[in-house]
Length: 274
Image (cartoon, rainbow, N blue to C red; front, side, top):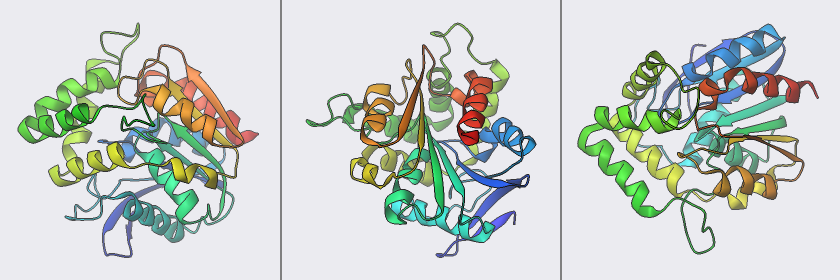
C-alpha cells in the first residue's frame, strides 16, 4: 500500500503509520490526509496504527468524474479498511466532511469492526437549513460557495481559509505559512471533485444514520466555527448519538487540527485510552 484500488477501479492514496490498534482518520474538504499528520504521528508514537487516505479526487488519489456521493465515498472507506486488514477493534475519526463517511459507514456497513468513533468539526447530522433544521446553513450560502469556486477557485480558497482557521476573530490564528499550505492542499484537488463534494456535504442528511452509532463516540467542535456551525452539527450529533461525549472548544474555529492541534491530539489519545 500506498495505493488501494477501490471496487470501481479508483486508485486511493493511503498513509499507514505505526503498529497496534487501528485508527482510521478521514480528512475534511478541500484538504488531504496530510492535514492529519501531527495526530497520526502522535497516535503512532503512542502505540496505535494510524491510517489516513486522500479522498477520491483529492491529494494524490485518482480524480474520476463520478463517485462523490456519500454512498460511494463510504464504499471507498470500506475498501481501504479491507485492504489494510483492519476490520476489527477499529476506531473511525472524521473531520468536517469526513464525519459523513463515518456516519454512513455506521449505517451502510452496520459499523462493521468499529469499537469507537470520533466526529471533529463534523458536518453530521445535517448542514442544510430547512424547516426542520433551522440552525443549518442557508441554500444561498452553499450556492455562493459553488459560484465562488467556479468563478475563481484560487481566490475563493485564499479567503475561505481565513474563516476556516479563525483569522481575524480568534486570538491565536495560524501562521501565513499554514494558510499557504492549506491552500496548496486544496489546489491539488480537481475542480469536479471539489464542487461535487461540496454539494454532497451541504445536502446529505445524516439524521437517519445516527441510530447506527452503537459505540462510544467523541464529538469535538469549536463554538466559533463559521464553516460548520456547531448548533446544527456538533450539538445535534451529540443529542442524536447514544453513548456520545461532546467536548466544545470555546471560541475555536473550524480548523481544529491546526488551531487546537495539541489539545485535539490529547483529547483523541485520552478517548482512545478509555
